[in-house]
Length: 190
Length: 351
Image (cartoon, rainbow over all chains, first blue to last red; front, side):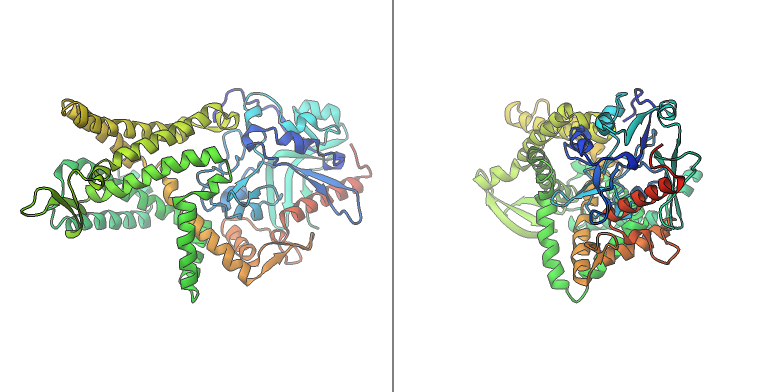
């Protein structure tokens, strides 16, 4: 998995407020060969009864991934580039620990296959210097893959944040969420 | 050397040593004080004892991890509960479904299942044949006074007989040939996947994914070479065939605890996970405060709260609830709502 073409200057930036719920990313995600043509991205209404707000979620690739820590089969690994890979198919026992412990609600369980699958940032593409599928098709740039300089030019009034607070727990991630200028963290629960 | 020994896990070392000693004792018992032990297989025996030691060591270390330990304890607790007969039957059924037939792989890909099933069946039958032979637990002899009836002794006790030259004899003496054919076909199918699937090409490693297949094919081909030699070459190349086969098999045995083959033993945990899910459903489901729908067993959520804390993660909220009470969709919605609020409080939804 060591690929010299992996460009570590490129980063992933999400801005859920820009998501228009078009599902283009979902269709594109299914083109990723590391997913076996299964779409791994999550896109849904936040509270359909009262709002038209939609949200989109890719794996945040945590610095200390909870999913990997709670995996009883050592099936989830993080590589030297900080990419947290989907479950090793020979090891995953389909227990759903990762699905239920991920603070971002990312891993999916394929019930019949008894296998967890999740976004690995289109490793087949990113390891070859290309952008993830979802980021290439997002029409509103809710999903953006590029350099810090590029995102600063595009969003001068926003700051990328990769520190999230879930109650007592602080989670740092490889993927950033675009927040109001000057923000340093996102607290999920007040 | 001493520093290396100090890094070893003491509990695992003790358990692995006990397992290795137990297997050696069973060699003496099963072969009736080495009377039925085939000395030609001594190198295989050493490899097997090392494999037992290594597997027991790694298994023990693996079971010490908090999530693995939890599943292990829960599985044992549920299996040996008052529902023992039910869970025993369920475990046996799951063993056939998931271990012997690997049905879950069929749902990943049919071709992949065929390849894996051939490969796994060949390996499992070969284990069943060679390990008892290596350990001296199975031994073949002529019936006294009869040189056409061959009978098998298991742990020194007679356990069936067959006539030389019969169909049963042909199948039994060539069992490893059939295994080699199954393994080779399966391994080639798996290799084809690894050569053509873009996702696998991007993520595979030589030592993790290719070496096991190369090793299995090497064992099969050299094993077939032994049969070929005594069938068609009158044993002229026996020494070469026997040595190359022994080298590949011993490499395989020594490598089992360290490499991909360890998943054969890890896979048993899937049975425990199934029992855990079933018992959890009986006890009650957790309802997501956001979606208002059932999403997991309450037992699982409660256990995960404990395990994550043991691992150093604390998702407890100010109100005493936990972020883990939310379903995956609930967690994504909570993040989106928090992001929305942050943007709203800043006075602009976009920036």
